[in-house]
Image (cartoon, helix red, strand yellow):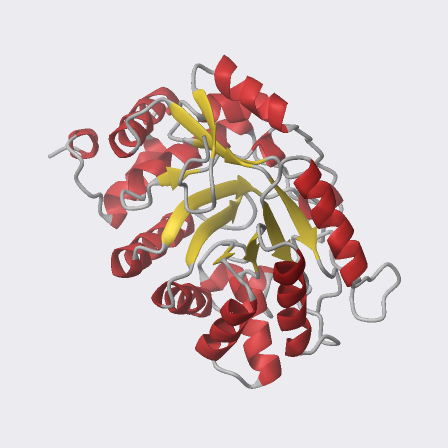
Length: 350
């Protein structure tokens, strides 16, 4: 059976077949990804979440070459948010109709594990209605190594303190060749997957991401997708997949050219086709801008991501697209879809 026929019949692609998708014409890839999208999500609904990214610290020992946001310990410009400042940001989020925060930070060697537990308890005692989507796998790994607790123990304690779900950050490309060059202190691809495996076993839902368009090969993109697909077969814990393009500005890789919208749409479509067991695919208006994000809805995307009342990491690389909830709804509608607010687990709120 030909690759195209397999996709339309809902059959799973092998590694070799998935790699061949890079040779397809963009239009054909879009049509195939769209078919998969409507098989998994038959209604013309495009979801989004009203939330805010809160970075509790930018002090980080990871030294990732693709990051323009972090500061080394002791470096000027490093910060740790006070709980008062955290409360102010959450109150602003609530006032704008938000109901979730994405809580992430650098790997800060000066903060004890108890800091994160206290921060979660503070949020939940003061704002019990807020969903805390927090701490990507590299943070969890870092907490584990710093505290001497196992990954499972770290997760159990964070859940007890109020953690609701985990974002898929820090995946970059799940290839150890790439990781050893870009982010050697962030843990191996197997460690990233193990954090997610343990989280899923404890009942936490998580997302998965992929940052591409830097030093990875097409084979490594497929390797990444297949690792996500395999873990999803095992646990079923991923609610969505979010591929986005590397932004080189102000980073140690600023000599690299930024990949364009065509390649973004191609990889998005391939992600939709390969990840037959991850229901939702998020488009990235933050890196691509809203018009390309609209087009991405015809390349397999069914989620417009977050209002991102605040976003610092991509902005530090010199890319700044801002959208209000009203604008997100407008862009979804004008692309011919019905906008719906959702929770992290993709249950609809309207």
